[in-house]
Length: 113
Length: 113
Image 1 (tube, each protein chain N blue to C red):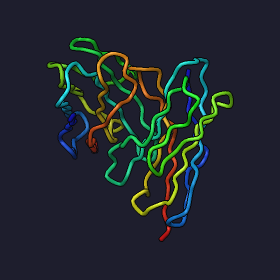
Image 2 (cartoon, rainbow over the protein chains, first blue to last red):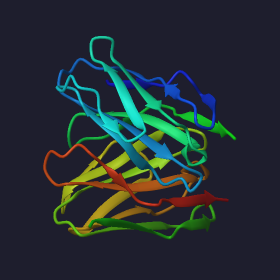
Image 3 (cartoon, chains in turn red, green):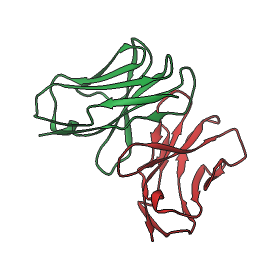
């Protein structure tokens, strides 16, 4: 079964600085998708960024970018120029198409002003 | 644009009472629909997913059930709630077919006393 591991239960960063959240996963498949979701205090899950495993190019969405290392099964999220509104729980997730998302346990990110 | 609604937002129910949580999606046809549960401080666990009316798959055996009476409506039910059913319930949708990206509703916080 596929598993997703986030080894950092909590992270903190100064406002305007850069932070990287780690994620590793385990799968025997070659074609899959990886995601980062943000869960603010409202608890609604918001899609941050998506990566297709067959694409070598790392996905980028404004201040958010990933470092996808397929051989190492690693998928980290970099947040540049951190803002107070970035404070949330961040979940790494894996899927193989229209099937279930497998989530990590989450990393709580605190932004210090 | 597509929107997803869940209600109620908050629910407090006694042990042994029935449950009905509703999820509806607007702005799309034949979506894939999902129910997840999130225990406090944990990641999300898939409960049910549906790729069409009368096509519902259960991921975790429990006293919950799901139904899809209409194309864009997904209902989570229980005949008798247990204390362990407390949690945050999230509905999600993805484009019908093999779409990988899931979009989440605002969630329902259920407390069973």
